Amino acid sequence: MADDIEVEVKLPRAETAPAVARHTLRRSYADRVDSALLGDAELLVSELASNALRHGRGEITLRARLDDDRLRVEVIDEGSGFERVLRHRDFKVVGGWGLEIVEDIASRWGVREGTTHVWFELERRGPRLGEPGDNA
Image (cartoon, rainbow, N blue to C red; front, side, top):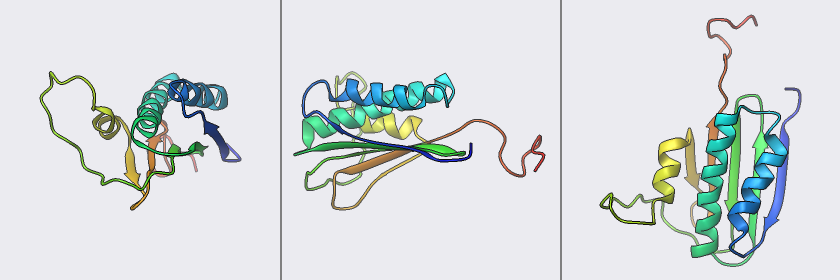
């Protein structure tokens, strides 16, 4: 891939925000990543957009960037921030599992300290420099 493919959109502060986020990723990257990675990205961006809608304030922004190695997705709102703490709870509890899902699926994720700017990365599958099958 010669160039990074970047996307930035404002999400509606409405119940449609997760669906708009998923649609944006699918429209932007469906022909550039495998379906498993795209499905994971859609699930995780739904969780982050839902959290921004439920717990955040102000405008919600979705940013995404695809390069040769990974898809990085960021969801930003104008809230005052939160700590990156996973809550451990009984499996029977409904709701509140979003960041645990992100933790389980993402290659990496984080929060910019003091903000509600949450990001995750998904590594692309395939050979990497120095791996067997790499002809570089």
